[in-house]
Image: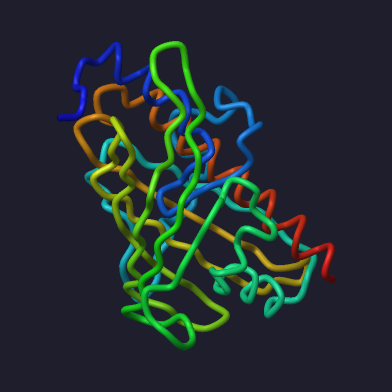
Length: 211
């Protein structure tokens, strides 16, 4: 049985700044830096006409401009089996199907949640299912994250990639749902935001290094 006490849940949430369900980033990022509401006021991020769960209490949206070819950025993001080569918090990943990533593809990956004063170090296992993929344009996936004593019931994650005169604009939006994470919405949103900001930072660094 997962703990549902709000105070303990907040402590359990402390390790997960590295993840974005469907999102991950630099574990050294400052989880207090992102706002508890999405910082980008533009239109929602969609792929194939669908976005995140707008009714979710925990959601975050952000974007960055990358000075690299679109196909370089796209290949880094969609070659999921190579994520550990440029995202340190992704400790393992495997495809659950074969061939190019496409609608219906699934992949399972892990990320560590370090020990806190009240919980041991655990590993979260995330199973992501691709719902829509448009080459060089957008991708949308979702799935749960489960660890020993911590669970995110579902997360929906959307990415878009747009060529501009100044580079490629990469936008992303994600939501989390689940009893544990919803026990402390501000903390969960800040941690989700930290993960997304770090993921974009890593993607930008990896793509521009290749370019």
